[in-house]
Image (tube, rainbow, N blue to C red; front, side):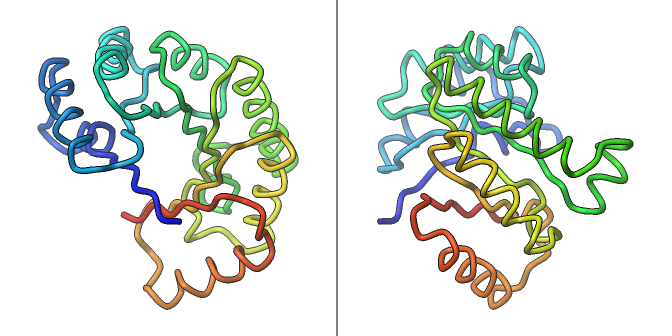
Length: 194
C-alpha cells in the first residue's frame, strides 16, 4: 500500500526566503489534506516557541494526522509533545560524513543507543514514531541495517530511508530499497528524496 506524506510545511520552511505564517500554514494544511494525502509533515518544534505555536495550529485544524520533526534528543521530543502532533519524525545518521561533522567524538554504538533510547522515550510518551535514517544515500548498507534493527527493536512504527542530499540515481535507489525490503519484510518502509 502506498501512502503519501506531504512535507510542504516542513521542507518549505527550509527554503530560502520562505517563512509560512501560522495562518498560511493552517490554510495550506487544509488544501494539502484535500488532495488526499495521508499525513502532513509540519515543522521542527524545538526551533522556537513560534514554531511550536505554528505546529499546534496545524494539528488543531488538520483533518489528517500531523508529523513533526525532532532530532534523536529528548528535548526535541518534548517540544513535539507540546504541539499535540500524532507522529514524531526522529532523525539520526551514522554515515562517515555525519560522524565527522555533526557527531564529532561519538561512536556508532553511542549514536545507535541514542537513536534507540529516543524512539523508546517517544513511544512511552504516546507518540507514533517514524525513525528516519538521515543521509541514507551515503550510508553503508551494514550501517543502514544496524539503524533499522535498532529502530525496530525500540518500537518505531515506520522506518524512513531519507536520501537527504539526493545522491542516489533511480536504479541505485531501487537496488538498496529492494535489499532492505528483502531483509526486513515486516517493517513499514518510507522513502524521502531530495
